[in-house]
Figure 1 (spheres, rainbow, N blue to C red):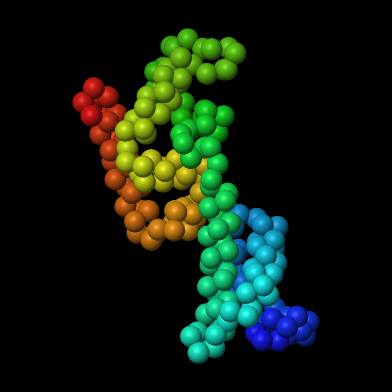
Figure 2 (figure 1 turned 90 degrees about the vertical axis):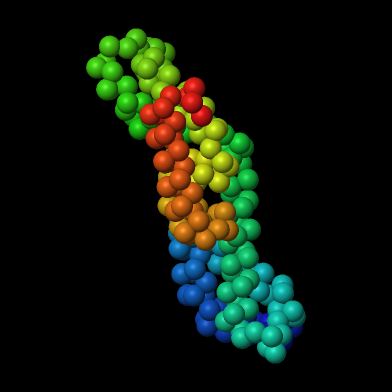
Length: 191
């Protein structure tokens, strides 16, 4: 790492040869596409090069240092991706009408259709009711449900994004869905 800090190209190549696959594998588990993964790997190695002078072999093994830098970079990257306005609530354009509006079929198709949107009035009311019910959930439960069901993230991805244990995310999903069922079954007036 001293040679990397001194801009020794051979040392940088050795560092990449030794840890490139490990960093790639770690990034691939977290990021959605190969292109994002490759970008992240490159950024991690740039960060390793920039911080090489801070590495202290007395405090950690080199592999530990590399993985620490990798983890921090991936968390930073995920936080940047999730710092979008959609966190504040549901973005109607992201709601899948077939998933959210599927309950409209249980009305026997008797509802009026809004030809402009191609959605029955009942489906629209169902989405609105779901939005109101989601807003009544604690923030973690609401965030996990929105990301899992409306944005398509896996629970493992959500755990990484929120920097929370996977068990916490699973529990939040379970409790949130139970609360939504309770709200749906008991009507919104009860709360």
